[in-house]
Image 1 (spheres, helix red, strand yellow):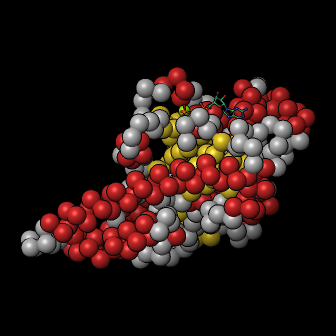
Image 2 (cartoon, helix red, strand yellow):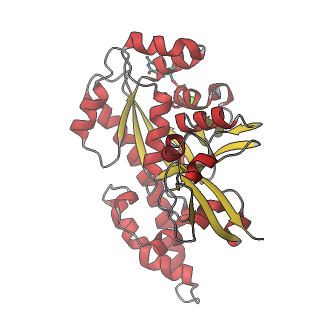
Image 3 (spheres, rainbow, N blue to C red):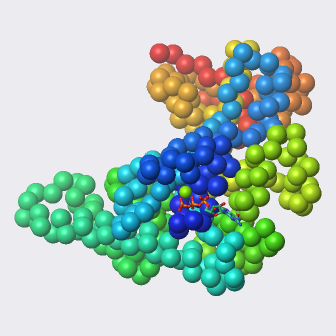
Length: 343
Ligand SMILES: Nc1nc2c(ncn2[C@@H]2O[C@H](COP(=O)(O)OP(=O)(O)OP(=O)(O)O)[C@@H](O)[C@H]2O)c(=O)[nH]1
Ligand SMILES: [Mg+2]
């Protein structure tokens, strides 16, 4: 679940990246792409660690990348480095903008660059396909011949690919192009300190088809530089209900349709990130591929029921809350699972 941070030059990308990962990428701008990990805050996980006091506590981590896109065709230059990024955070500088129209222009400017970068890829591929018209085509070539003209039309109309309805097969067949505009996007309006509400005004007026959140990156960076014990007071003094860090993580989970389940024990308590709606064997595969192949059963307790039964396995079992689930079980957010498998 990698997230790429994009934005026009000097919009606050590296500041946001530092808020999320603690990594100071501004000093590494010689590199096209810097990666870092954000630890997912989760009160349920913390509680499980308190209960089990494991040797090792492994919270979920989400990789973020900060890119340095400069020069002509900047976005093509970084496409490969970010091919693994499933979601995009598009940072827009609103701290030097005078009104909503200007913020919208800035947002559109990068969106247009990304649309153009995708269009060039589609056109190149279509040209190559046209040149090989007489040669036998692979199934992949055929699929491209059918799908790419639709993508071209969409992009030429100035619209992102994410708004197109595509079948699973079509999506799969065009995956290797790493199109920018097909990926889910979260817009981060980097607000001026004196006017945080501008993000809401923007969201209302711009009516984008993608989610928008407002963050004052400068203040949030100051916050993260404080010792943890002082952060709450700092936030309260500024009237900020929740730090950007948690808001961005939560919005990213929603954006990419992710949930977390837990494995517990005295040796390790661990949170695992999976796609919402996935079945138990698939969920087991994030631990180990063999777990999917050799899947037998999943012993499941919902986190809330586990706590309601006194926070012990025995208590949950005695209350009949320990369920034995099979291959078709759809894992829920907060499930505590022990997989039974045979390899
Ligand atoms: N006032 C104000 N300044 C900010 C804010 N966020 C970032 N800045 C400043 O804007 C400048 C650019 O911030 P960066 O985070 O380096 O932006 P960037 O998008 O990574 O820049 P490039 O990598 O050079 O394209 C820095 O001087 C930051 O201190 C903000 O919320 N408010
Ligand atoms: Mg930067």
